[in-house]
Length: 511
Image (cartoon, rainbow, N blue to C red):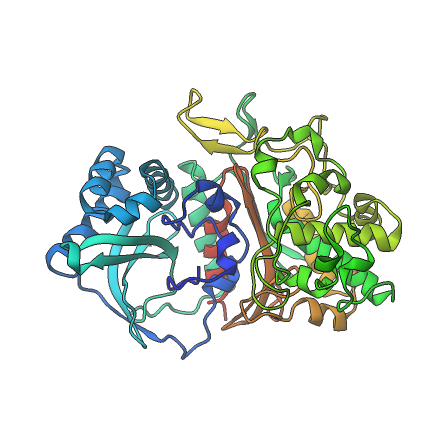
């Protein structure tokens, strides 16, 4: 979702801040962690909205205030009654009550509560009522968007919880670097103390590390604390590594962005009539029309089956195109997986061997890899998510994720290694400046380049990627002109993106 509450295809995989409670499954929410920086960007003078700090009157105002009260109290019994009494039959059919309650509880816990600020109106006008609130944990702006059915006594027909841009009636002052870092420290003190965040944070400018923080536990079984060198699951952040590997092969003349993948992906994967239409460019930009291998077949399979790239083949066979390649945009884990097939075809090497030799090794990313999760790995964080199933309210994600990550995501790294990766890109150690420009160009108009989210902000271009799954969430933001790098990794689902978004918002105010 864009930060003002407008639907956006890319945000469907983005940003655990963006609690879209009309989504039918929480899995979709949990997988979503990519484009936080794209969602929050807005050029100066292009607001297109106005905020008025007056709560609406009548039934609408009563229901808006009730929703805010439920979030602040984390009142699930009250939320059940609110759902039954104020949601239309159509919304209740699309949004089962258990999903609404779990999304509300997650938002309540993550935000620490919210305070009403304004109602936002747009030019041109929109049908929905967008209420702007500020959360208490991160001091970030959120949008709660309602649609009220006038023919059914103002019952709620749609409700969304999103990140939001700064209100038009708030003047956020510029900051010195020291002031911004102090605000980051204050936020981290708060969210670490109340256990909203478990993970690591690094903020740097150039090669100089300005801030680091580690808190929470890598494993709750043995109460082992996270430290700054703890390895965390990256989720979809691996897509940056896969895209950079493809770029290297293009620079070496072994591949082109415009060639069809039929040259490398044989018919044991997909029919040739499909692969002849799909180019490398389409896979890199999520415009192939392919979907995700996290499908019903995956849900019914043993996680132990998926270690090598070829092991995913049964999850891809039979996939169909949602649209003709290049005609639209749909986030596709299958597309990124097939880039791993392309890399293996072009190089004759195992995907993981190629990445170690050409990305991790040259950069000095000694704590990054796609580990077999049934083998002991030192200083590696287990992922956790809230659930009533286990005593203490936490469940680990061992049986939710693949046994080993791959081209589309699921590898591990540290915030220090992510900083090394960012610096290696910026200093030309992995690809040329010209190729970097290609990687970091918005090729689709929705804030996505080749394997990187791309955002134009008041302080210049910000690129990177997020990642998330059940029990994990992280982000890397690279401020191309300003030289800042922010890396956040968490072993709670949804916990990293709001930290990263707040850090990014503070860095955009530094002058």
